[in-house]
Length: 512
Image (cartoon, rainbow, N blue to C red; front, side, top):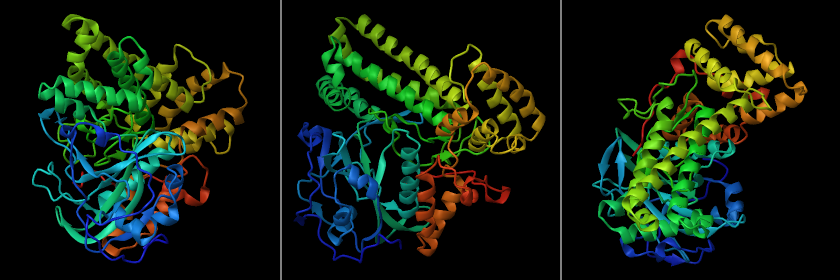
């Protein structure tokens, strides 16, 4: 176990409510009861602490020492309910790989409550793997240790990469086993999110023809995430505009980092614009727009290159749920359709603008030129044809610019180095247009192109060590690396090196 381990605390029943200062403010629990089911987490046999995210705890205004106490461990395991907590499971629906399911919901999660952080922002604190709920659909409501640690690593990596994301506050083992493809040690993740509102939450009420429920949910989303929309003449159109904009920006960031979510279902699409639900996600190594890792994505619906249209499709489903209240807002069904289509059209333009702007930053370009998109696409095409590593290619371009490494390092990432040479000629000519010092340009590029990301083979090796040998040191080490992704750390070369053929991980799993 890691240095944050706690001794096994005595097991307490889920109804044993003891003081613990989270200072919960539970606005979602004030909504009508049709929005959720109230229930406490199910206690586990022998909880032990794996990790508390100290930096995040401080951001939330929580005491890290208290969180690592026996009482804190019991709360993170679901064995004790903190003072002020009103545990509940949220109901929602969703399209899963294009097929609509009218009722899903938190089948293994429990929203403990909300806290207002030091930044003044309201956050949900939720347990994942905390036992069955009315929405479990015959599932056990539990989580295995591997997927819990995977979400911890991936979500914290995304936070460090400055991508909007849910985050991991704590992980505990349960002392119990769960059955998936095989028997695995159980665990519970404490997840922090701007909220757990999803496109699927809106779909749940729309599918029932519950316009008033949709309106209540929309008003709540506006108050929590888009307060500026309330000041407009058409607040529900402004809400849709806001969600569209945040999703466009989010998916552009994914694409600029080589991230593949894996299950972009509508119930995994956050209204707040955060990355949520890390299941079979992965960062690709060799660039390939058709890359799929998810073991359940047999048709490539959520392949890397399909993520922008998948997001637009999901947003279209959100727009459909809002049509009844848009109709009341605009005065007619026809006007509502026009309004929704206008909002959705904004996704494409905003995504493309964010994508090109991000690629300019990665290429060290400070000004805009009409040929920039084509220059970037030419590089990506050559990377795909030559199986160049996505992360390393852009990072080594930084070294090329300031001369800290020879250009050979970038060339040799390509199966045919001359393919890189042909592209680089045009790149150099483009940079010559801008009289920027090489050191300044390279520094800006390094802010846009990380040196480290959670490479699949390293993640899997880390999880195997924890699950098979109860060795959490590799987890701590990898977490440290991906929490500082933009730093030059030559002593950590193995974390920046692509997998050897025998190490490659070709499939990732949901773990549910």
